[in-house]
Length: 530
Image 1 (cartoon, helix red, strand yellow):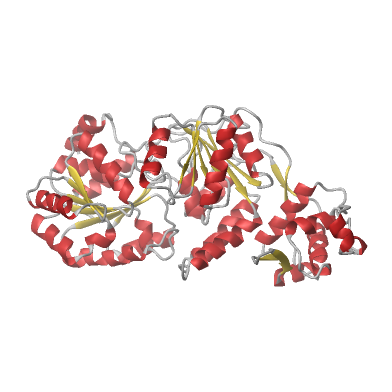
Image 2 (cartoon, rainbow, N blue to C red):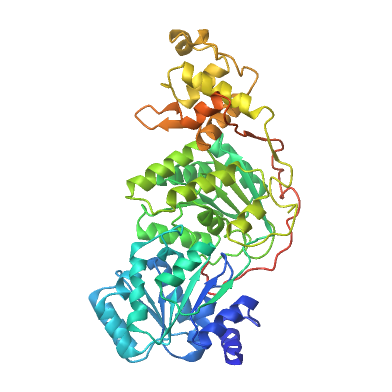
């Protein structure tokens, strides 16, 4: 281990390893299979890069992201560690050069895409060269119960067949106990060391708000962190482009990042953010992997993520230096339906995809400590109560008095109107709006007309969205989206079920988070991988 410490000091400039890093590196040196779960910013990549650099033998790293491979290899090469990658971005000649270098023992780290690794030609190359160990990055992708299942990862079981005596080490930032078991089974790991870091990020303040006015809510959050670095996640590319442009018009140094942009545009946006020419990146989930910037002060989700695992990983890109940072999630009941339609359009969803979507919405609607929910989701105990670092424990949200009665009024209105109208129009009828359309449709004669006259329209729209998310209302996404009452909604109407509706009781203050977040040991990943 002393040789490892010297290598870490010489190559990366760190005087010490974090405790779990030492254990993970120890498993590599002992040639024992392992599963290492270190949340975003916990330093996973050092766990396989350092022993490879110290041993001087070839380590093979499986990574799903071509752009991330290049960044890693460039960083390692600049630090004096011989490294290369094999993926579809290389020309035939470039690939031959790398393969020749592998056979000559030129490299200590070789990054390979999973679909290339399992090719007979690649496996044959590695058998001839000799491999010290395999590191499977983003290992949760192998599990159908993970948040980012990739079928090509399932083929990695061939690694054990071809290299029965070579240790395999699986790395991920997010894996529930069920996913950990699946990883071990699919990779045929033998008595693996299971090393799990803490999922709590005490320096992060978690806030969840119903999305009522995306641009206003986002700019209010940016003003609390004026001039600081931040990331804003959107569900759709069009939302990314529109929000980035709107922020630029308001004087923010904002760039857009998503898979629909040309490679050069994505690279420029990433470089602008890393070099601080841009203060905020508006992106889809395509952004963030391998971004080596520890001073991100806020992460905003302008739409609901599709799983708690995604949320933990993306929100965890804030405050990697250990300083207080904010994670704001803006959601709507429509997000649930949007994600469901996206998952279906992409093909048959993985078995866990739709349940995970429901768990994410439950988190948004929940009134339990956010830190506790996240930590316990990943199978760990949580001791701080109250945390003092989330909207629930700070008293910023509460359950609306008479929630079920309010829900019945909304559901009854939808039924009375024949389930043929959208959320905005339903809200107008409930509030007793005096519009030509309502008069023409004679909806001003309905029993439900004006039932919620005293409530702000934003509140009524918010409750409608919550009822969508809780499965009481369903949106028919035709040319003109309409609301319908579900089986659960009818149970609520009959008095056979109840529903909580949330309200915000205090706006987030300007400037700093409501109270200083609990201190944290600064998390770091010297090679930049989250």
